[in-house]
Length: 192
Image 1 (cartoon, helix red, strand yellow):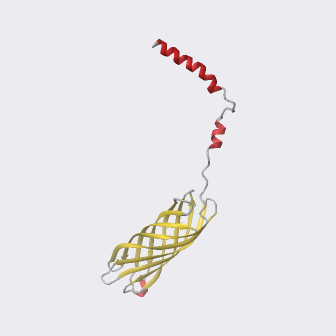
Image 2 (tube, rainbow, N blue to C red):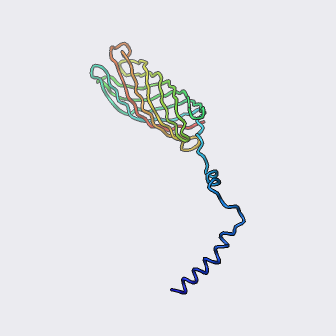
Image 3 (cartoon, rainbow, N blue to C red):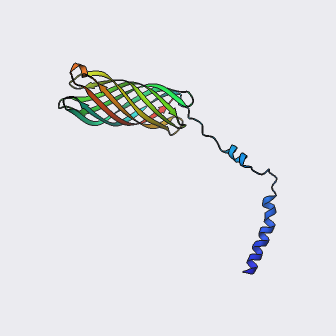
């Protein structure tokens, strides 16, 4: 045991100068801080297109209600102003949501604007605009919508995200029926 301790002490004595006597300058704390890369905001400027899929819930005056799957296409363009992003786009969703016996929601088209906060690879945003809904027996009508969403870049060109929107259609196509809808969708987009 005594011999092992002596050998360890000798090894430490002879190796210490080799470790301490390097030719490079010592690394200071300031040099370590400067070497750590600072996260830069992601670049969100450009056109995008993609697919979305989710769930829609409808409620109307007179006891109309229904829910089901909704999904379709999304296209748009964003401009990155540094910390903030502004954009515009269009969505077209297919649906087959029965909400009143013989009445079915067939599709929803949206013209939207969005404003968001650039979080690097993430974009947290609010969106609003006009919507047009097409039904099987009540015709079509235009209304408005508003909501929030989040998009996250997986690569420079591919992102995934989610969006929740509230829609309002007053006096749907002159029928006297007020209709509102909430949609929650996930999406995958490709940035050009």
